[in-house]
Length: 226
Image (cartoon, rainbow, N blue to C red; front, side, top):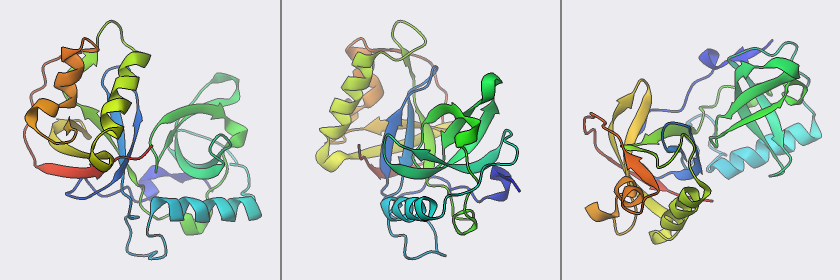
């Protein structure tokens, strides 16, 4: 039986904690996925890190290949093997497209991909009810400078700032929400107001400003990993 995301616990709301992050992109706003370095569950203490969980899931799926999905539909939670990274990961089906492909979102690492539906497999039951680890956030008040797509130069500048930061630790302040998606301010080391990611990208001409009305809900600490 296929499992939908409504039957699986999502990761807890953003809180004051450390987490790993992976940068992806969106057509309307800079999109980050934040994942915690310590696996967020009280049931499976052996998974202290997301890497521990991923290694365990990969070992299980490699030794006991999961069966095909009987019928792939929007909202299904399944597993997919990323051969480019040599591991299995949990995914959610966002849309089933024509020509036998589906758009998926990675639930523990963030990011999106379009894949053949036959590559989506049933998730092993012991990995089903563990909370998803990725939290997607829009960085506040920026749009691409010249189009609807972020330029490669902008992506490179973001990575330069993020990974030059002290131990790749970012300070993230939740300003408000767009629906259920947090809108955040990202500060890189030494976390002074002038080290605001949005303001920097605008000042160097890699982004343009947009108006965001948001409420401050506190500061968060995230650890950023490539």
